[in-house]
Length: 103
Image 1: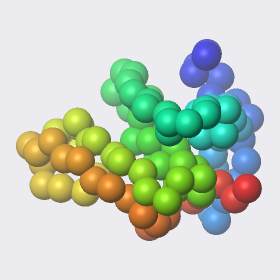
Image 2: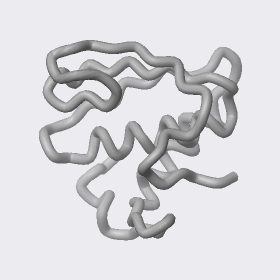
Image 3: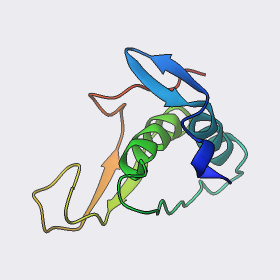
């Protein structure tokens, strides 16, 4: 997928602007997979939106699955723990502070 065009077209949710490409990718990962649930690695260069896309994907997955595992390996900018820590979280509801996709 060509992520360079990810910011060209977008839709807004609760004051946030989300790339239609990212929304489509999250939907594809979530709804095009069969049992078992998908395992996804999000990687890319600095300041490319990895954390934002991960949050979109986490929220989208939480619509389909009762619980979603989130392994945070970004020790410099963790989402749920102090800096310098790897963490595995089981999320059972929408993550606060970010838009979500409604299906």
